[in-house]
Image (cartoon, rainbow, N blue to C red; front, side, top):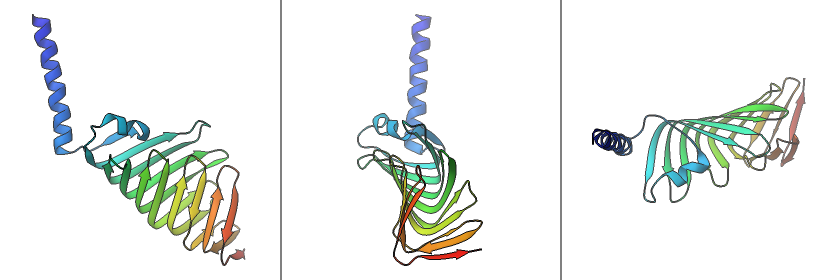
Length: 181
């Protein structure tokens, strides 16, 4: 009888803790983005502070997305992010991304970043743009707005590009400017 009371009290305590988190908001959440949709009831949208999401591809590439705050919309399987920082680790190097805002779709593994987007790669180059789309599954960075890439030995700017990060192949469109140092 004592053991049954103990387990009932433990279950009630866990239920109260989970209810409190859902009702009053979480202060920190870390989860695999693919599993979050299955963990929540159908009608729950969440507001999160200090969000961390991790993705790992079948080829061993990994991505960590951090946001100061986020809103998760379960029906759309979409995160709306504020003050975004991401790290993508992919052979032969890695790159870090910062942006004012973003939207992350875990099902498609696509993050769309807006507002002062900055990408720093492991070779010392810095890419700046107002908009950037990262398709993690396909290892592609896409910008359809003006961009500038500053490397240690040259500067490169243009109106749009598609960069295949795995193969390190860049396809740029529109007016392109090179400045060699």
